[in-house]
Image (cartoon, rainbow, N blue to C red; front, side, top):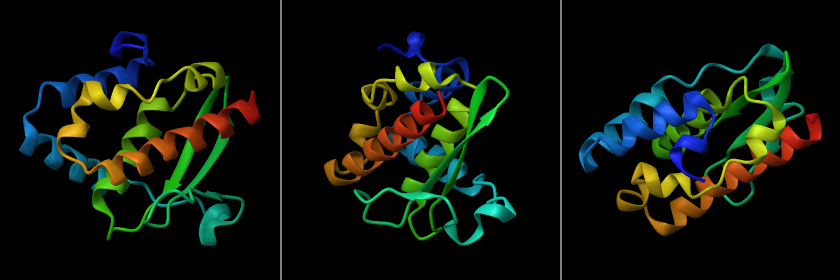
Length: 142
């Protein structure tokens, strides 16, 4: 899957990262980390959320229907800013996509963003797992 096969908002985010140099990529991740919205009250304490066990940091994901699309709620502690940024950009980039569109997203888009140049392989495995959890949850809503 190329960036052009991605849902529109995620495609925009990929392009923004692709056009950035190494330092800018890290800055963008930190900006996304700062934009993570608070969890809705019903999800406080991670009620009903699924923990991404492959991540070293505690990462929680919850998907719900929003019209014909999906809305993801994520929670990652501020002490894990790159993971928090990635989770936020995924939630933003996939919001409103249908479950089928979410399921079709290939983890290869991380390469197109150039994140493999700025994050360790261990961190890349963790963030790939976040996408896998989101895809699984979206399909359950299908």
